[in-house]
Image (cartoon, rainbow, N blue to C red; front, side):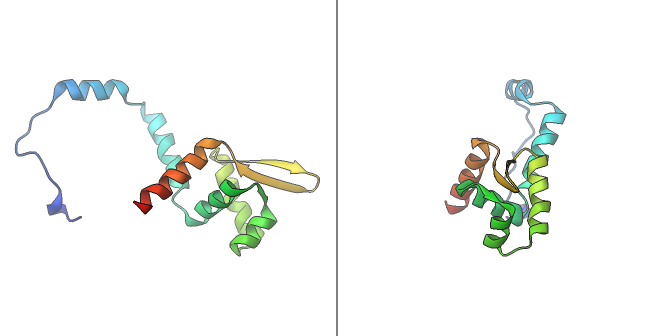
Length: 119
């Protein structure tokens, strides 16, 4: 969309009631910053691939690396970022560490994102 394609009002008029209503519902700056940071994590295709495979099954680093044809170090690095942002969790079983999505919200975000691009 070119800049000239953006529609603007023909005159400047603030709808105070709408502005006031929305302002009262706006989260504080810190919350909005945190939300932006979470969405930045989704901005990396490798992390999206990892989240996608984990939405299908709990997996260990070795399995994810094999599936995505990447080395374990690269997968571990991305899993660390995902874990720090609360998107994945892990559990240890003997010498293996298994990863899964942190909760249903992550799967919902992935599903809705996919639905959006397929529209």
